[in-house]
Structure formats: C-alpha cells, structure tokens
Length: 290
Image 1 (tube, rainbow, N blue to C red):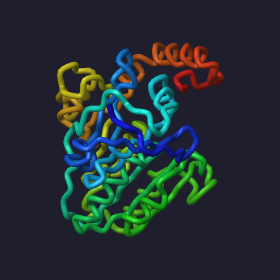
Image 2: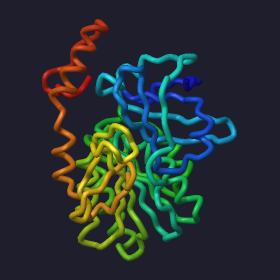
Image 3: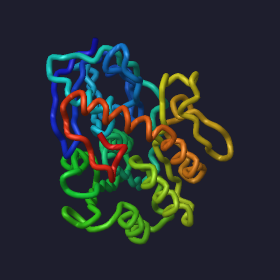
Image 4: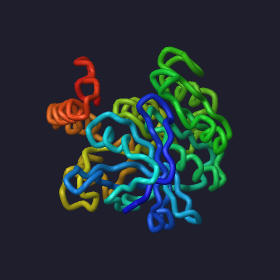
C-alpha cells in the first residue's frame, strides 16, 4: 500500500498527489514513470513521475481526470492509499551537457517536462522552458519551471496568459533567435499532436529532438506489447525501449491511430462510472472525456 500524503488541485481537472514510495523515490530519475491500479479489479495505467525526494521517500504524481481510472484516482484523499504501484519504469531521459536545451511541456505534459528541465540545468546546460495550454485555467507548474530554467516562455492558445499561440510558434521564434546550430537539443512531452508538430518544426533544421511517448500501456515490462510504437521503421515498446525516442523517427500517424483504438470502450466505461457515482455526464462533443 502506498499512502497518499498530500493532494492538490493544480489546474482545471488536473490534480497532484504526493505518495509515499521509498523504493521508487530512491531509484527514480527524470523521464521515468510508474504503473498503478486503484483497486484489485482496476486497470493498470502509467503516470510519469513528476518529481522525487529520496530523503523523504516520496514521489508526486500529476494527472488529468479524463477517464474512469484517473477520475477514480482523483477521489482518493490524504490518508488513503494506492494498493498497487510499480516503478520506476522506463529508461531515464538522456541528460548531457549540450549547451542550449529547449524543454517543452504541453498540457499535463508540463509535469513530465519539469524534472527533465531540472536535470538538464543541473548538467550545466542553458535551459529554455516553453510551457503551453489551451487557456490559463489549464496551466500549472509555472513557478516550478521558472525556478529550474534560465528562461521560461508561457503560451496559451488564445493568449489568456502569456503569449498567444502554440508552443511550436514559440519554438520557431527561439530557433530564429538562438540559431539552429546553437541548440543542442529540444525535448518535448505532451499531447501527441503537439509532439508531432514539434518534430516537424525542428526537422528542417536538423536539431536533435526527443519526445516522451504516451501510448496505451498495460504491464510496463515489455511483455504485453500494448505500447508498441514504430520508430525508424522498427517496432519498439515504449515501456522498455522508451518512453523517450528520436522525434524525427517516430511514426506519429500510427501512434495516434493506436491511441484511438479503444476510444469507444473508454468512453462507455467512463460514462457508466459517472452515472454510478451520480456525477454529471460529459458533453457529447468530447465523448472520451470523463
């Protein structure tokens, strides 16, 4: 059992829980994740480790309540416990001193970008952080990112906070300002469509670009094959070969198609659970949302 020590609402439908998990905290590195279950009959699902404190034996987990499992996790309270939690899983992000590094986080991916940006900074890089969301209500970790980045750029789609537009627009401006040859690496994590757009923005310039993928995942040890992705024409398992991959080698079209495979089942499970809980049913315009 993994006790929940703290709980906080970070943004609209986005929560953070701090979990006591000493073994995980003492071994975790930036870019890794855990897999958990809410109960013995629940599904296994991954969450990126948003931070880790080996001395206190704690890890914060940040999640967007968008399905049955994450909605249920959002109901857990301080003092409660997660019965199953396994990690750290996956390969840590490759951290090198490459000079200028741009770390991009979109939506809930901001939580995953934070420890990576910190690790790059600790390695002696000049780190520019770019975080974005649809609107101000969905942004979080602005202070945390600002503390570990030499420069932080905030953007929202309609300009309700920070610059107006998408993270890729800010990335293009940075490439023009810094010069492509001066950028050692771009790291991006967030919605798949955003990561694809980042890859297409850096591709013409030949800038090394890494993305952290989030396919459907079950066991997290490479046995089920549920998280397979195509990278450089080869099949990879995100849980053991990733989750980080060369963005210019990822088949994003296939990845997005696989992410939609169980959309109907996910929606049905979510709506049934909300009815059971006496909660409001989501709009038909967004059937996958819980």
